[in-house]
Length: 362
Image 1: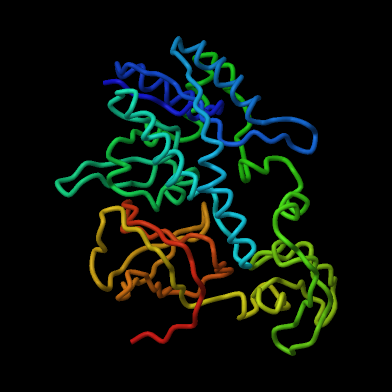
Image 2 (image 1 turned 60 degrees about the vertical axis):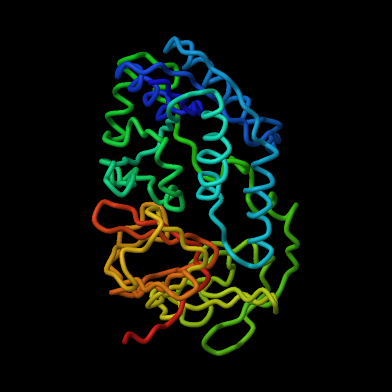
């Protein structure tokens, strides 16, 4: 089978390419250039990644092609990222990058080259059933990346291969070392790709107006100080509030953001009730199978990568959105982030969190 793999320069996609070769596939590597701006030190991380991908492709003896998706990335991912921050929400560009770039623009490119399938180095698995392909959690729960893939469709997954989904990260590293791959010990990339190692506050301030405003104690309504711009804060944040031990002496946390009034609501104590919710509601929920398993169903959920899965119940609304009722209150639900739902090892899908709510169960 002819397979095109997205080669990022990291060890995961490098070992994934090796696995495909060992399985007898005809493999070509493609480096996706999604962002080209330099960081604060004048370094273009995309150029470094491309050079690392070239070295890996040479070591594996496979051809490497480069495709430029910078226009698509800015229009479909970055512009949405900025709009969400302007609305006072906290978006997840990694999920959008998968739905709009890697499994959309890249998939279209791969199919035009007459390849049979595309592959990536994601820690995830797929399973074929009579109803279509399912997305399964990876063998390494600590590295599982189905959260970032939860808004894909079964049509997108139908042509996808995840060669290392059944491996653990230590196994991947060991294989890379045994093959003497040039990036065997390369550090994993973290954070948002177009920000890299740059200071987030400085970066986001270039694109999102961030006027200062009032920080208000959600209990007393008292103005406790000034924030530096709502886009610099997220729900559950402790660091950077700057109030020290005022009040009871406990730490202060961000618990709400109100964009129309430019108000940051804060509370004191890591277990303050304002930091917790009994449920959430989403907008634009996408079920991988195309349909929900029922109008109301039991499932597992998470709204952060590596967050322990929690038990919950979901209900499909008439407009297709989802309300999720937690069995136990969950901390720091942030509008704009994504909630993924699961049944056992199967990822059902995901949707953007529109807000948290105190629900009354029927």
